[in-house]
Amino acid sequence: MVDVIQGHREMMPRKYKKKLGAYGKRNYNPQYLERALNAVRQKKYSMRRASEFYGVPYTTLNHHFHNRHPLQYGGQPVLDRECENLLLNALQTCAEWGFPLKPINIREIVQQFLNKRGITERRFQDNLPGEGWFNGFMARHPELTIKMAENTKRVRAAVTYESIEEYFRNLRDAMKDVPPQNCVNYDETNFVDNPGAAKVVMKKGSKHAYRTLDTSKTSITVMFAIAGNGARLPPYVVYRAKHIYEGWTEGGLEGAIYNRSIRGWFDSELFEDWFRRVAIPYFRKLEGPKLLIGDNLKSHLTIDVIQECEKNDIKFVLLPPNSTHMLQPLDVAYFRPLKGAWRKTLEEWKLKNKGVIPKTVFPTLLKKAVESLGDREGDNARAGFKACGIVPFNPEVVLKKIKTVDNASESSMTQVLVEHLHQLKTGPNEAPKRGKKVSIAAGKSITSADFNQGKENKRPKGRKRQISISDEDEEFIDLEALETEQENLEINEDDYEIGNCSTDQESEISRQPDTLILGDFVITKYSTNKNHRFYISKILEISETEMVMSLL
Image (cartoon, rainbow, N blue to C red; front, side, top):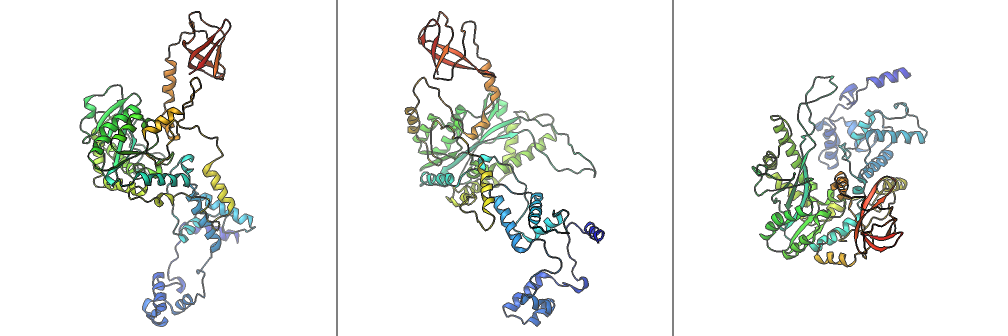
């Protein structure tokens, strides 16, 4: 008997479809059965007339009308309807919390469920459902689908409902009387020199597929800005170079501006230049209050930019940390189709040329990629503002995407699973993060008074100053460059014999050079077990045996 069952399992197709008409069973279309039932319920036809008109057996129609055989013909699912609905709700809740399950995980859950209940299912090997069962489960629940998941950081998944709700409360006040064309969102992105992978036709049985295409890891930073009415401001291109040449600026988009930096990133100086040459000229053509929305990078917060905003009636609004994937229109709907057009344009160029893209060609390729979007560019910009709940103003569009413990249905899964998912989403309790130099609530506009308030609350001179960097700023810090700059400091240790510094406010030195006096500034080396750190210090006291200094 076991051999017969095993042979039957091997002969079964992966996606089995019952043939209609076999042995006189179900020799009709299921859609005609539903139509016949509706005709009888609405009293358009009698049961006999509906059976003849739609070609459904009278007995079958009679049984379905009186619900005499609720179960389907043939073998029944392993899990009853109640258990499958419980599993269905659990899968949906896991996906909403940011922890969707793979098909193998779902099959293992069913295996554990059967083992705990002491059920041995002969159709499953070791009680583990096969792919056929999973395909049947998906077919019975069309509300589920399989998608390619994108990885997101835990800090992004831990964005709270309350923080987003507070952001929209502040944004409501900032957006008062602001028309769509006066609402601008800016963000920088990188265009890489790699068109990515592609599907190709190969001989069956080939293990690897390669195509000859020159690529590199270089990238060029471009600042984009879009308005709520779908308009796009001129892009601002930043090359990684010490100098810029005329050939790097030719053939690009109309009004585009080009600049350079040592690392190819935006710093405060470049952002101020973008603000004065791109944002201000656009806003000056418009009447009424204006709104500028961007992420909370430290390079975007300068006193000069804020003062210019106040002069031109521009409200500068910052997004909450780690929320750009939900609240930034450029990230939500604009950049993805643009990057797809860029990869297509880059691939066409690389198939005809060798090497990496030269900077003289980049403006032309960027223009071709942007113009290939056509009218979709404006549609994508407007869709981004709508999906972020900005234009038109609708916070519920974003808030409904955030799962909270209060709105998690207890009937869908046990409270233990809710707590487990909540722990996975938020992670372990972390130490409080250090405060920022300027504390501005997300959604509120910034004024120069906020900077002055930060100066008043500055720590007394002589204490160590703590510098905080937001989570999103870490992506723009070049640690290797910082170490190189530190190594380039010219320090003559023969002139300054320096001992180990304590961790207190005052630093002590074992010996003093004869040339030093009170009030002089010196460079001290603080030695640890692994490395050395250098600090600028001021001499406070000098004696024959020691020197007391204050670390700046």
